[in-house]
Image (cartoon, rainbow, N blue to C red; front, side):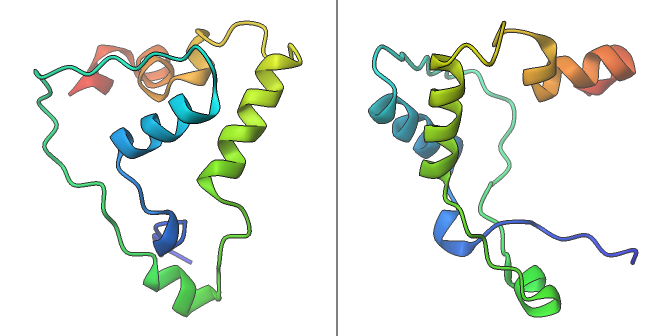
Amino acid sequence: RGSIYNTGGDSENFTIAEVAAKVTAAVPGVAVEYVDDVDDLRSYRVSFGRIREALGFVPQLTVDDAIREIREALSAGAVANYNDDIYSNLKWLRRVFGERASA
């Protein structure tokens, strides 16, 4: 109660670019656009030791499993419009909180 945990596993700790490379390898026809003018200089390497030690949490699925599940859902037509705001954290936060979500 009142604790915050990074949820995941150390073996699945990837940068956005690494996940993008996995997606392009797994989904034919996907193109990734890289931009140089990114203002976010945070590191996305995090520790999952706290959740493992406190709760014994060890992920059962991998990023590759998630990519496969999403690819299959898209292929099956389970997602009507993948550009919908509900599939974008930033767009959804802007819808809920307005432009202040950008700051």
